[in-house]
Amino acid sequence: MTDTALPTQRIAVGDCITLMNAWPAQSVDLIFADPPYNIGYKYDQYEDKRDDEDYIQWTQDWIDGCAHLLKPRGSFYILIGDEYAAEVRLHLKKLERQRRLAMRNWIIWHYTFGQNCRLKFNRSHAHLFYCVGSAIFTERFKKNQVPFTFNRDAIAVPSARQTTYADARANPSGKLPDDTWYLRPQETEADAPSDGSPWYFDADGDTWYLSRLCGTFRERQGWHPCQLPEALLERIIKVSSNPGDLVFDPFTGSGTTLAVAARLKRNWLGCELSEEYARRATERIEHAARTGETMLIPAREKGIERGKPRKKPEPHRSRRTADGQLVPLWKD
Ligand SMILES: C[S@@+](CC[C@H](N)C(=O)[O-])C[C@H]1O[C@@H](n2cnc3c(N)ncnc32)[C@H](O)[C@@H]1O
Image (tube, rainbow, N blue to C red):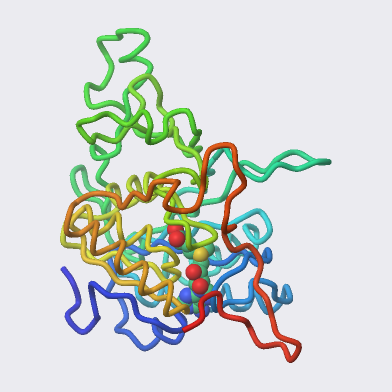
């Protein structure tokens, strides 16, 4: 059920903390948050380099805003890098002590195509905190009824008992994935089955196989510095929401969460500081809603030709004028 007082099927342009706190409490079924990581990425309207204390306070404020919006039986996922994972975990503990939400898993997304380092090991993971709303403190778990949405069968994978040992005791509907999600490039879109079924549910494995999105991948839109793979969101949205539920993303970016939500017939709502990102993301989401498919952009259309340097590099670090003003990526 969607709260009617809340806008849906749109991206609200502005600061998510202000917006979230102005919206009615306990009105969203599923929240996925992928904030800027404070590592100097180049965004259109956001400076991704703040003092530690300032960033940590801001992080706590937006997490509180999400806790305010989350329905008691809702789910909340936060994706974060190594730099601030510990601080996020501590704040979630505080909210748990206040019985506002409860953490269920600390998931590791193991990806390939991370940045190559010269004198240390290449980073290949991000942290995904999976939490549920306050009903877990007041409602009992019953056999076929739990105090949050968890569609086990929508994301089950074949177990080794089924695929390797032909064990008669194996659950025919498979098993739940582990809490390490391994996404590598070998099984990317080139190998996608023609019937459109998700290829990252590898028949022989109980882990996810899909990499970070490279510039050449058709799924990569090419105008946002840190677009997530739709496969990551597909699992989250399928397990933690139902068609018609409201999925919210406070940091919409290129619109990955909301495009997958629209494709899976969920209602959607986002916040985004950049008007330009919001405009382009809306096009992507509306395409997904209309066609039921991922918007794909051939590499050539993004100025990438095999064996040649990219004509227009993707943004990586924000620029400021001499008096400290952020320079927008796009000019009118
Ligand atoms: C890491 S990106 C999200 C990428 C997104 N998950 C995707 O797949 O495209 C973070 C986004 O948050 C936006 N942003 C930063 N501060 C914000 C704020 N206070 N309110 C709303 N959006 C904000 C940035 O402009 C950026 O697009």
